[in-house]
Structures are given as C-alpha cells and as structure tokens.
Length: 47
Image 1 (cartoon, rainbow, N blue to C red):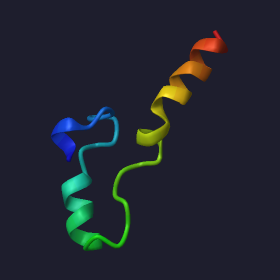
Image 2: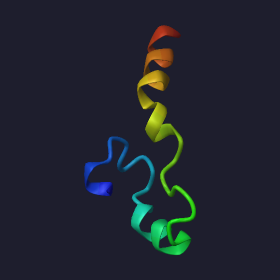
Image 3: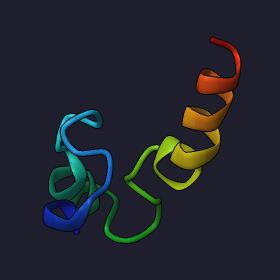
Image 4: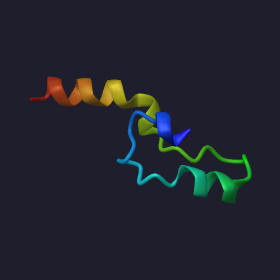
C-alpha cells in the first residue's frame, strides 16, 4: 500500500496504477523497496 511505503515518492507513486495493470501477476514495487536498509548502509560505508 503506497500510503505506508518507506520509499514513496522515490518510486513515483505508480503502485496502484501498476497493480491495476498487472492484475496481481507482477510485484509493482521496485526491488529497492525491500533492500533500502542495505543500500543506505553501503552508501554510508562508502563515504
């Protein structure tokens, strides 16, 4: 659900639209949503 998304508006907020198009066949959210903590940690470590 977009209103509880931890990366909104980075994804562009297209979740409901994509979900309607895919009819549940595909996950509309970008993979980064599920790996955001790892991504931020790696970015921080590389600073």
